[in-house]
Figure 1 (spheres, rainbow, N blue to C red):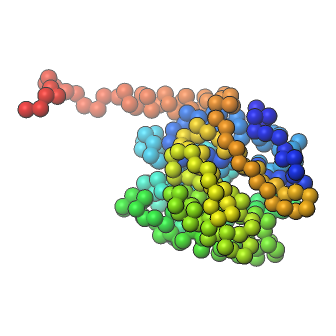
Figure 2: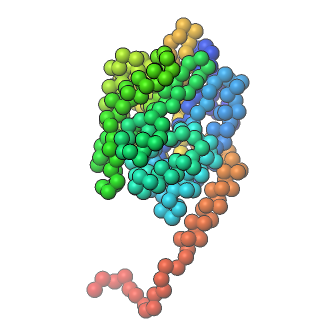
Figure 3: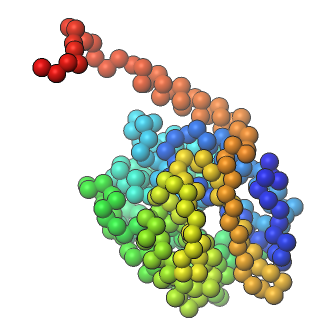
Length: 305
């Protein structure tokens, strides 16, 4: 399985970063294969001299029939079973209001990063995370759209402009480290035009401009890989039918390089333990869907009178 993910970059000097990324997952079906991919990549990390992380870039609780019944508990368990390391909240996490997604994130074993949601409830989440890659440091951010039209009308969060929030988080990470970080790695959940606007704004930053090779995107349900500013925007489509593999490395002369590939998720076998979990939840939802709602005491017709 690990060979499918690709070899160590030929020009890499020292430890490199490998990111496995998905976005907008509304059903459990492909999590067993995601789990296999993540485990395989992490099992090979020491041999390849790399750090492996897996991200889901928003919309992982809703809309989903199962989440409508259990408030997103099973979908959060799936994140843990598949060993996801980082998530950013998407607009549909707000479908439940603000308390429910925060309760679910307390159950998530990875890190939910919130760089630009100013709504007080979400300020409990970390603004960024500093990931060590050998002797270098990567600042992981989570940026949500400021377009209020994409949120449930009754649950619109207060959102800071993504590029402004990213600059603030970068400065805080720099102060925390006592030196300039080596890479900015934003997870985003927004429409493509806003991704492009954000990428262009980051490209003009004195430090992030040369240190943001990739935006790990979400919101669109189709595959989208394109360049904007000095970054590659990567969205792999909904429901983890594809897996994005992003390698970020440094050459012998210190140049920052990156590579993006995408693999069909059926290149990976299903992890038996994750599959068992999925089947259990699917059996539950099947039972619920077959339960009678109400008896019909008289014959009825669909004919319109």
